[in-house]
Structures are given as C-alpha cells and as structure tokens.
Length: 278
Ligand SMILES: [Cu+2]
Image 1: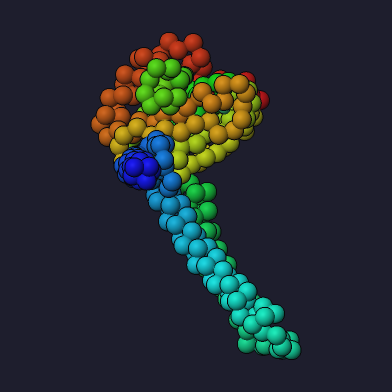
Image 2: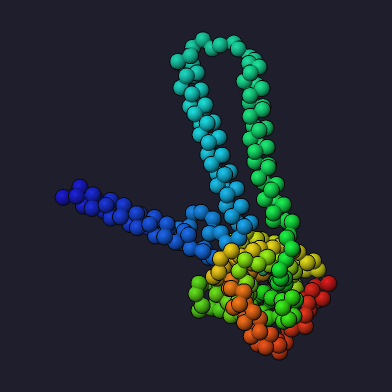
C-alpha cells in the first residue's frame, strides 16, 4: 500500500516534469520575447543573430568534446595509474610526438575559433549601407525614438503596466520595415543605459554625450522585445524596448500617422536629448 502510494507520487512527479519539459519546448522557440523554461538563445530574426546562434552552438559542441576528452584522460589516469594497479611507475619524462601534438592541436583549435569569431565581430561592427536610421535615446526610465530619415518626428515609449507581455509592453512601439538595414544610433540623456534586442543580436551602451551605432536587418515581421541592459537607476527594470517589424507598405502608413500623432510632442525638438547630454 505504502509502496504504491510512493510509486504514484513518483509517477505524478515524472508526468509533471515531462509536462514542464514539453511546455518549455513549446515556448522555447517563441520569437521576440523570453519564455518560461527557455534554455537556448531567443529565436533569431536577423543575420547577425543567426551568426551568433551558430557560433554559440559551434562553441558549445567544441567545448563539450574537449571536456569529455579531458574527462576520459583523467578517468584513465585514476584507474590505470594509481599506486595499487601500477606499483612500479615508468620513469619516462619526454615524448616529443605527444608534446608537439598537445601544443599544435590547441593552437589549431584556437585558430578555428578565431576565424568565425572575427568574421562575426566584423559583421556586427561594420555597419552596411543603411536604409534608414532610428535614434534611440535612453532616459530615466523610458526610451525616446526619433526618425531623422522619415520626417524628423520623435516620441516616447513607456512601459504600460497591464499590457502583455508583462513588463515588456509599451505605449508607443518603435516601428521598422522588414528586410531593411536599420541603423540604430543611441545615446543617454541622463545616465548610461543600453539598447538591447536579443532576437536581432544587438546590445550597445547608450552613453550621455556619445552617439553609439549598431545595426540590424529584421528578417521576420512581428513584435520583438528587449530591455535596457545597463543598471540605470530604480526603474531600470521597467524601461523595455518594443520593436514592431512590419511590411514596407505598413511602415509607410505608420510614418504618415506618426508624423501627425507626434507633431505636437512637447519633447519633439529633434536631437534635444543629444544637446542636453553635451
Ligand atoms: Cu536604462
């Protein structure tokens, strides 16, 4: 009776575990936002993030193989060469072949890591010819976006308490067209913030008095969320970044609406944040 009760509980636990795992799997690939039980990187929606994901998986595979190899060697040493099984140790001190191998192979591995690593670094830092620019200004504690190429309007983007997804929903999203190279220029109006959107593989500091640049090309439409990623004060956790990626036509329509909607925005002296940061 007692055993069956324990068995029952164990089975319940197993089922719960499996359900959680399955739930995690189902959520893991949700695009543009974090998910419960997520173990991998967020889904990618830009060429840079595709590369980051590939590089991460490549390194994870490589380090797994190396770690297992070292573990096997250690186990062999422990089992074969302990005092009991190997009472008379060999007095060998050098083996040229092995010494050359254990110098050369790690060098080759490092070169194999360096090549894709530098390629990725150049992809991130060498900004291609931009189709448009969005300037993101970090403020305590919200973001302001301005569109210098699309009519010089600027608006604020604040967290909306009850909006889903929780702590990520904002009143005015940043909107960009799909498959266009968007240059992000960012600065801080008061303290250092950081503009980060995982699905696009971007994270860059927003520093008062400086204009930092990065870029992304969103390859999918939809909502993509990020957060300020530099401790910036008491509401640091409550200044999300919400990017809505739409078709080119929808973007043009949005620009027309935004120009009117934000025409009377009190903070709409273009690049005012940059000036106040000097
Ligand atoms: Cu911040």
